[in-house]
Image 1 (cartoon, rainbow, N blue to C red):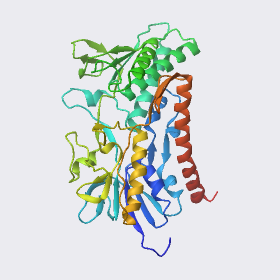
Image 2: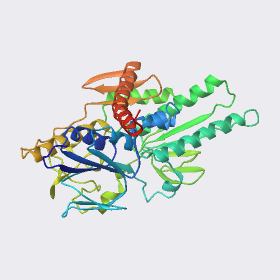
Image 3: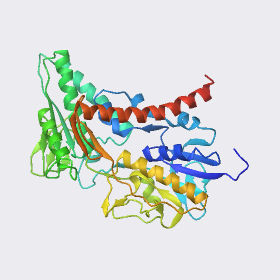
Length: 401
């Protein structure tokens, strides 16, 4: 570290936005960065469809935050601590263990599955995929169900019934990947019992609401080819351990239900004395600052940004763009330079629909099939390799290898 006064920067959240902010700010040796998360790992949520369908294990979709932070030049420290509140006036972050002072603060805590309280049984009997532990629990139960169906072959063969509520990006990708995986699983192993019913319940008129018609049409055709049962303009209104009741009165038998029908800000946001919009997300200005405290930034899924009056979809790509701008503006605050306004928009959409097939719109160019799938996999691998390099560097420092 130089003799120049250090800048104490706290980043809350080890998701896409938080890690990119750390990477960018760590380039300045005068920045002392503290990264906080209640989990010791970064979960690559964009790969969750592969995790659930056994294409990848949990080690391939996570990065250790201790080794990641150690991979920098001694100016990044990770604390596995839960944030309980923030004293903005005295510039202190309050955790379950202690208080930490900051000069600049980045709130990047992301979002979580929103369990609708008016739907009886939703929280108790469905699985979200925003958190690694919930995704892992579902994956294990799914695998055991496949085993039980194989084990009962020749005596009876009742189907596995899986309900997926929510036909946005996550719901569509998971439905396609599970349908593809189960089909290949049964065909490859020549099992007699090979019944799997996947029902995608969608409240809208079409899947992937708000997306380009090309992406909707190609995705729907692929789902139907994989024998996914799509129920448009329907909602789950009640569920128990064995069944789901829909808004049209029909009752569907189910072994599992994945709820991908909505998100909300992570819990700590509700404790913060900040301006929020009607959905509970932190309000920010055009520089990504919290208007009440200009040394505080909010980025990623815990805030909503707009481009030409329209909300920008909260994707990993958008989160990383926000992180880049946030880091630049903190640098400019330190140097007392004018801040940069955001002009962030989605650079593209890549939708994986089973191994070897995807649909995409990237920089205005449409594609479907294996080419789109290869592009999505390249994007994911480049991201994982970048973080993996930093984590490997940290491991070598820790263990001296």
